[in-house]
Image 1 (tube, rainbow, N blue to C red):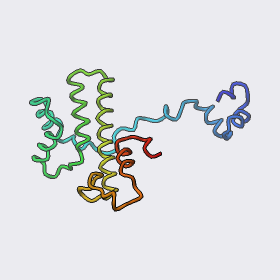
Image 2: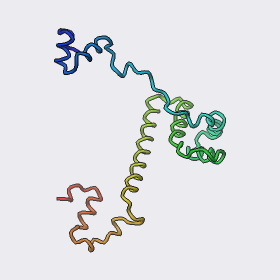
Image 3: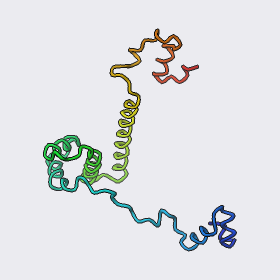
Image 4: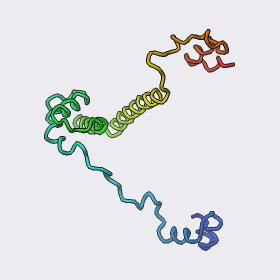
Length: 169
């Protein structure tokens, strides 16, 4: 509220475009809302808590380069009731464990985590789009009969599929 430096709260609020009640609230506590909140913590219990120390860490210590899917399969073999949807949580925990064990700087760990998340989101997005499209299995542009649809140019469709955005002219 820079207007407050020279005007009373009512005038400063009017010039800034909010109510006088908001002006008095800001004056009483000038911290940003993000600075007032306590860290949220976990919203649900850790699904790996009963298994991490007793089972996952011994596997990782014995074979540090083991793939996450291998650890998940072993856990599911031992515990049939374990939800298979914990894979992403397990991947994050194992990546954090490896970063801590190898002494990665925080920036390297965050970059690796962001890269992993982006790849995972991309794969899930493609799978979601394919499911929404409901295309028959085995259909592709190579099997499309362009003669059955006379208004479509095969050359333009293939150019667009290849990424040539100027082909539509």
